[in-house]
Amino acid sequence: MANAPESPRHLEARMLLPQERASRGLEQRPLLRRISPISVWQSLGLRALLVAVLLGIALLGHWIDREGLKDNLDGQVSFLDIVYFTAITVTTVGYGDIVPVSTSARMFDTFVVTPIRLFVWLIFLGSAYSFVFRDSWDRVKNGMIGKGLHNHFVICGFGGGGSAAVRELLLQGVQPASIVIIDSDPGRIQIALALGVATIVGDATHNATLEAAEVQRARAVLVSTGRDDTAALAVLSARQMNRTVPISTNVRAEENEDLLRQAGATSVVNSISLGGHLLARSSTNPGSVDYLSDLAAADGRVELCERSVQPLEIGTSLSVIRTGLGVRLLRDGQAIGFWEPAANSMEAGDTIIEIVRSSDA
Image (cartoon, helix red, strand yellow):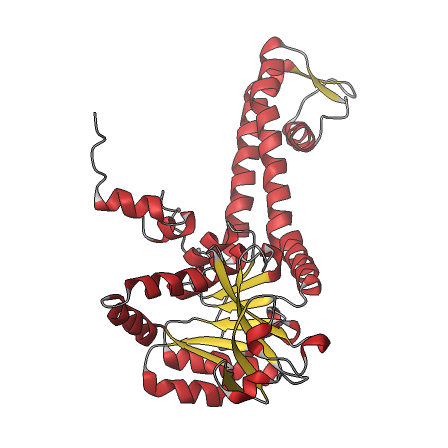
């Protein structure tokens, strides 16, 4: 019997990557998180109050069953002895000067005081970690990650364009440890963390955020913030901190392309305009559009690559290279098509843009 057709939502969920499914609500939603409404001192006060309550429970139980305790020093168990015995028993296992001798006292220490002791120690250790060790460890860990970043990719924005760019880099063989993602949305950062990349919750337009991402030592910066004005500020900040790093950015309005180039972007991609061109061309040249998609994707059969002219290729024509299909030369910042006379004699310093098989790339 033929399988029932899948619903559009099921088809969409099956075709998307896990991080995309999570961002669209097709996976189990993460827990809601909110900044704590209480201060640090209020938190410490609540923990101290909880410890006092637990000590009070132990103290009351010992006082009620004080006849089951024996003082090996003077034989008398006073209220101060109960306070002393409770504090020592809750924090340690006791010194043996006061001991439980009755069955009820021993059972109380076993099933009530011992759990209280564990809870008190957990509260102490948790407080020490939260307010003393965690910040120090986070600083050490961030320093270790920062020192290991070199020749890496900085992705500003993990929305639709940024997540697609990360997926493409991973398909090209870039290691997750060589990617740093900056986004102000903690939910997107949680999705990015699942990929094994380094992340920063912050504003990519701020110098401090880019400095934390070690943009000074980055191999490339990719800006996909979703807004042209935010993208321009991010590009300006990144260019100010690194004068030579290649910066690629998305743009939505065509009139902003030149502005982003003036801000320091080396590559500007108008995804809306490009999508419109492909959409219109697909009506008359569907095979060409499929080939362009294949060419742009890292998991396609062919790839578009750049490389420098080799010494043995100097003086030869672009059309005779053996590594792939030469389509363009870059010479002194000028683009030379394969049909132009200048492409018949390649020169030292030229950059070849060629189409190669994915396996060869």
